[in-house]
Length: 252
Image (tube, rainbow, N blue to C red; front, side, top):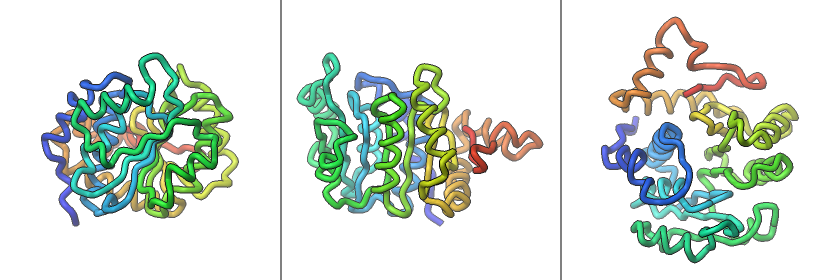
């Protein structure tokens, strides 16, 4: 079994380092996502593969993924229209470079995720190990982004859909609910990191949860992890495990 103990430098970066970049990223969701990313690194899932982000904004989450995938050769691919105030492509790239990201691994593409040709060009045959869906919050576009993610994620990969249960992003809730209720995809949810819902391929959720629990137990020094594990191991399982469209998920 790989050692899933996260280095203090990564924990610190997830807590503090990402604050050097403008944008929005919930701290608990950042740490929990970093744990998944580090688990993937320990398991060798990043080696020579790629991370795809739909909706880069100013690069906080992408920077976190860049930090934890160092020494793996993983590419970091981002798709975003880069049309908001102080968020043009050149400004974002300059900000990432100033924060010492390994820019030779970062490939940002200006455009919309609904442009199938652009997505194909951006991915360019790469093996996608993790996708972060955090683009438009309009229900129809989020739904299409989930279908795109289902189409291109690798069989052992993960998809993180942001802003699930966010009262300010009800379009996301609508899209994910529709996506799950239809049951047509080859994905199933297995964890909720604050407002980030995590998917894997159908049939892999048991393994995904078991492996992630190992990561949590190796990092029990973190207060939020210790609290989760106390509830998980106690007689109050509803605080940590719930059913979502027939799928038991970990709720962190």
